[in-house]
Image (cartoon, rainbow, N blue to C red; front, side, top):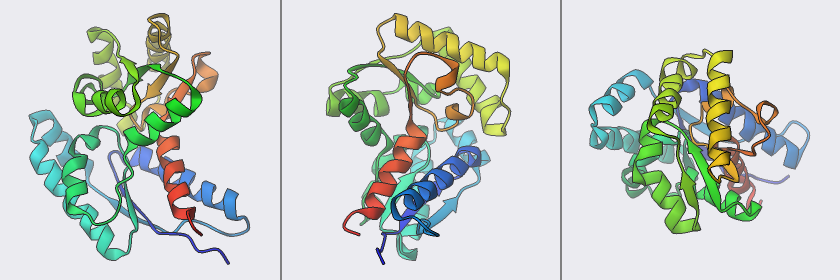
Length: 235
């Protein structure tokens, strides 16, 4: 019987999207191994409310310490790799990675490799304001994968950000918000984007490929698939 490696998942940011990770990873293991196989997975799900408050106040150092401590706990429990199940909190990925002796599977690296493999060099990016506007995500895609990353205009960035925190993280999926997102996605295409990164793990709850003709890059699915590949490597 093939043996798989144990995945450590740092979730709860928000728990709505962590569900998607858990489902996608287990589906991937079942697809590859068949039968009743499922993933060997350890989950640490944080309370998102204090993290969101620290995001608003800009206390990223404290968040880095919090996630690093949780990640080390997963490592000590037997995890052989770690995923941070959110795009935004990869701002503190260096602090988490420094605390670990196991590999951190970085969401931007998995996404960048997917884009290179599919031949898309100019891409749009949707996400929280932190992800769209700060360098930790866009610069990594540009420097490591030679991608040109486009973001919406300021007013549309505010719309994207507010829908994430005020609706999607609370499990609210509204048709009006979907229409706004589709409009913004199509504007990014008109500006030259060959595809658009859903750079917040909740966005896939709102829009999918049937909503637009623009190719969408679902970071939750890509990140989860990278974890499956790691778990099955050398199995």
